[in-house]
Length: 117
Image 1 (tube, rainbow, N blue to C red):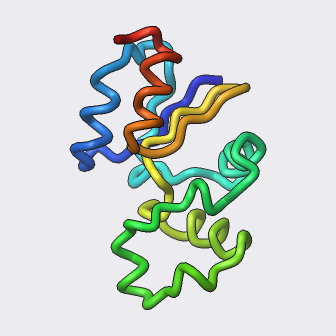
Image 2 (cartoon, helix red, strand yellow):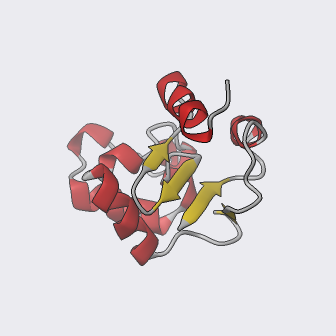
């Protein structure tokens, strides 16, 4: 399995995806095709945390008046399944590895994974 979950409208996602050869990867635009419960479970198996998959920058947090500090693991799971903006992105998922988000450390790890300098 080689999947990358992203948003076409996200400049950061586009910039990160452009750095790698994704010709044999399934590219999923999460607004058009939201992640499934099964896919989220696959991600969870590798991260052991729904919070690690949760975007604390989602505009939905303010709109829904959520207090992120009070959320539990199941809340993170339910919110990610409820609205695509709650998934931290991009997410690169293989059978054995996962790379979540756009922070510098993650992008560097992706470069090593793809053998890109």
